[in-house]
Length: 246
Image 1 (cartoon, rainbow, N blue to C red):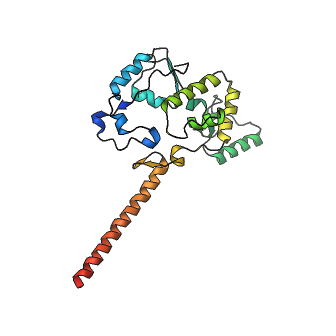
Image 2: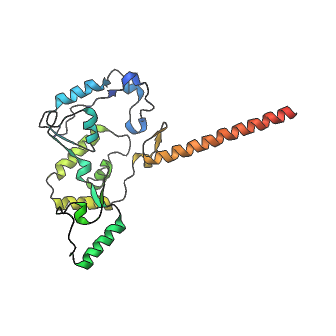
Image 3: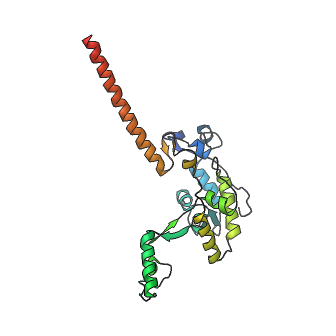
């Protein structure tokens, strides 16, 4: 809750007793098949009912990239909760999609003295700026390392820890001005990259890719395996031919 008290910390039991589960991603989640299929684990429908029972129509949900959680839990705004605040969106940094193009547009505006009419009246729009923009989203670990001097995800991810630090960031910066938030975002953007689980540990767990980098490893592994199988067949056929000749 708002005071950091844990209201619910429960393991969701996979359907069909885990049939079809390729991996529980234990190095990342800390969960094992014994835990997920144990007597303390509960079905998703039961967990969703408990979550909805703890919420109210005016509840404020705070967390990192929680829109996905709200979606798969089937929570309805105005019914199950009032609004949600995504830490990921609060600290995201807006930047040009193509830096070179943005630089040329701004240089031209400076040379023209800003005489060229804007295609939009909204100062925050890409049309007003004259170039496309995108957002750089920071991980909760990166934000905590640089704003709180706390490394919260150096090992196994703990959802309770993630929730507590999301609330801590919310309470600390909830009344910050637009200028203050811009300074914070710029600092996060300029800070050294905080390594993710995949780059620091492994991009592939039990054959499951946990990042885009993992697909390169899997493709490389498949090519090596194909080469190995083909080579093995070739050596075997050569050996059989030699046996027949002798």
